[in-house]
Amino acid sequence: MKILVGYKRVVDYNVRITVKPDGSGVATEGVKLSANPFDDIALEEALRLREKGVATEVVVVGIGPADLQAHLRNGLAMGANRAIHVVAPDAVQPLTAARVFLKLVEKEQPQLVIVGKQAIDDDCNQTGQMLAALWNRPQATFASKVEVADGKARVTREVDAGLETLEVDLPAVITTDLRLNEPRFIKLPDIMKAKSKPIETVEFASLGVEPGDHLRITRYAPPPKRQKGVMVKDVAELVAALKAKGLL
Amino acid sequence: MSKILIVAEHLDGKLNPATAKCITCAKQIGGEIAVLVLADAVDAIAAEAARLDGVSKVLTVARAENAHPLAAVYAPQVAAAAAGYSHVLAPSTTFGKDLLPRVAALLGVAQVSDIMAVDGAYTFKRPIYAGNAIVSVEAPQDRVLLGTVRVASYAAAGSAAAAAPVEALALDVALPSHTRFVELKQGKSDRPDLQSAARVVSGGRALGSAENFALIYKLADKLGAAVGASRAAVDAGYVPSDLQVGQTGKIIAPELYIAVGISGAIQHLTGIKDAGTIVAINKDAEAPIFEVADIGLVGDLFTLVPELERALG
Ligand SMILES: Cc1cc2nc3c(=O)[nH]c(=O)nc-3n(C[C@H](O)[C@H](O)[C@H](O)COP(=O)(O)OP(=O)(O)OC[C@H]3O[C@@H](n4cnc5c(N)ncnc54)[C@H](O)[C@@H]3O)c2cc1C
Ligand SMILES: Cc1cc2nc3c(=O)[nH]c(=O)nc-3n(C[C@H](O)[C@H](O)[C@H](O)COP(=O)(O)OP(=O)(O)OC[C@H]3O[C@@H](n4cnc5c(N)ncnc54)[C@H](O)[C@@H]3O)c2cc1C
Image 1 (cartoon, rainbow over the protein chains, first blue to last red):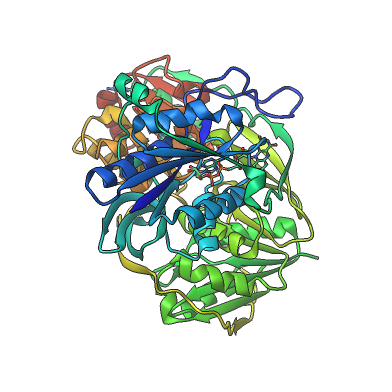
Image 2: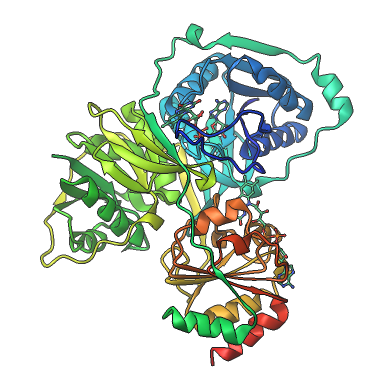
């Protein structure tokens, strides 16, 4: 079986982003870009399923501008068989991304689509669920354990109340949580090998997707700052400070 | 005037407090507020919802398939019930995050995630980049608006003088059987619930083991507080995953938050931005947690925490 993996490029999680003074966006010039951490986890899970013999092919998908190719090469170096680059001039909103994925799903006929539960730039947490709805297939979001057998997946999900387990028929969409696995590091020989792996380029306009980018950002602002606090020297002072604030 | 439909979250026959917080957000949008209860047994949950201030009616769909909150099963029902409404809201809990995008896609509309402020019926503020930027988002007025509500940004609606009417809704939708509930392992505890507690004590990697985490539990019990943790502490297996606070865990707004042996990574701080008073105990005076702490204490947690617990009598 084939697995499609969402592989989005985002500002690296270690970067502390700042809002441009004129409120027109966040300053991303020259900052380090990396794979969305949840997507590295998605790819790792797909590779493990292939290594177990459950899957035969792993395809990473990126939607974004022309310079996305180097990023997709990282996915290939990690172990994906091939990549699909949907060239879109601007970043797309989740509904558009889901509609793009649906087109690819119709063509590729995967049994599983694994995407991150959220991208750490926009933190939308929508794309996987939207794809599952459009595809009319099951979704298992926030996965921390995945077992695939007999045309079904048994997925443990991290929910607010604890750990929920679902059984879904394949094909299905899974979105990854942080504790699903620890992604492998890319080794130098793999980078060399990845150079010969295929990246298929598809123009966004050629897919016939109706854009779902209905939302407009009118302003970016920095979060409100917290007042600078006080340092206390011992437990007695801490207790006194809490009492002074009426918290004890 | 807006007509707002709120999808109720519930567990074990009880309404989740997150629902009452969505109502406060809906009141700011303004208009008529209906609460939709999907369950196998709806009566007790509907009665609770009907008593919340601001609710004009409660709609119920009682079906055996609704026993567990499966997004694939709930979504077509919510999409059908949404007809005639201008807004559909759900809490930005794992329940709402799982469900609402599926509804949005069925309706062919975008979703505003994590609404933290209402600027107008179709304009909202929401956090991006782990809360390091706040964007003002404008949604089209000619379509139904779907939004999840960042519950830490809103107080719960109070109780109403008189209960709102409860109506059973007849929906003619086919439900899929491709998704089946197997089990829910609840992190049951007698302590206050992390998401709604007024006080929270959290421990980080510095605790070093599950056994040592007893220090955190003891302090929490003294304060009547809920227990939280950093991702590092959860990953290391000291505590279950439902205790994680942060960008990818729970976003909380207690009156008092005590961070013990937590460095203060941005992903963790995202979860506590709205806390009233943040106390940090850390042996490293340079730890970033002290940049946001209202009260900081530098030192070894293994001596300070037991000392604090004793000082509380
Ligand atoms: C209100 C709003 C306004 C926006 N305005 C702008 C703007 O002015 N300028 C701008 O540049 N961008 C803008 N964007 C787009 C934004 O950068 C994101 O690409 C888009 O919102 C997707 O959200 P997300 O990645 O947080 O989705 P999520 O639903 O959090 O993503 C979940 C998963 O879906 C998959 N996925 C999602 N997108 C892709 C992708 N492109 N390629 C591969 N996999 C993917 C990944 O596996 C990811 O882990 C805007 C978005 C929104 C919501
Ligand atoms: C995509 C992504 C999402 C993430 N989401 C989250 C999230 O939701 N929540 C979250 O918490 N993290 C999250 N993280 C992880 C985050 O970046 C940090 O790694 C994590 O918060 C660190 O946990 P910590 O503070 O317990 O550990 P550390 O950073 O190791 O800090 C331990 C602290 O304890 C102090 N210390 C050590 N010994 C003692 C002692 N004896 N007494 C007192 N102090 C002591 C040290 O000085 C140090 O400051 C995420 C990361 C990524 C990449």
